[in-house]
Picture (tube, rainbow, N blue to C red):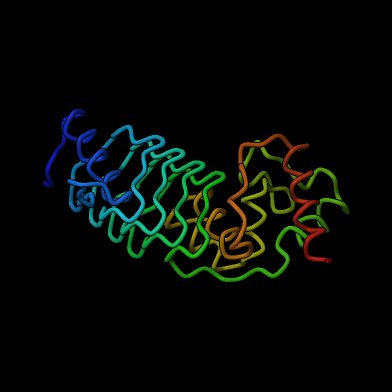
Length: 211
């Protein structure tokens, strides 16, 4: 088992890391590799460039955290809250993202598991929703073969590869990874939006493909 941190020790580590990032005297890059940070509250923390390889961050709150360029290789992120987190260019190779919350996360340039590219993903979803308004149901991942939520549609359009991703990571993460691949410069959509809000964003991204 990795090292555990008290709230005070973790706060001190973050402060020394802040100083390291800003080139202040006494700064030390955060090395939390293999640390036991299960359920840790790191919401809004600046862990850019930190070493979190192999850390247990299951159930941790990392919402709004800056994890850009961080080393999260092999980290346990099962059910971690990564909503609105900046994971740009982070190393997530071999990290376990099962059932993590990646809503609105920035995954641009991150080292992610392989996922297929669905060209013009939201344009493809929009075609199906416009031909059948009940095809989009944000309350359920998959209601039936022709009705899905936004993430569910991404998984469905990815075919067998989508099904494999869903079986490994769960529908939310599978959908997030497919969206990160399709729109590398945009944040992951909010998969708990209302039908109306989701459809508005789908139309917006679909319009981008026509420019």
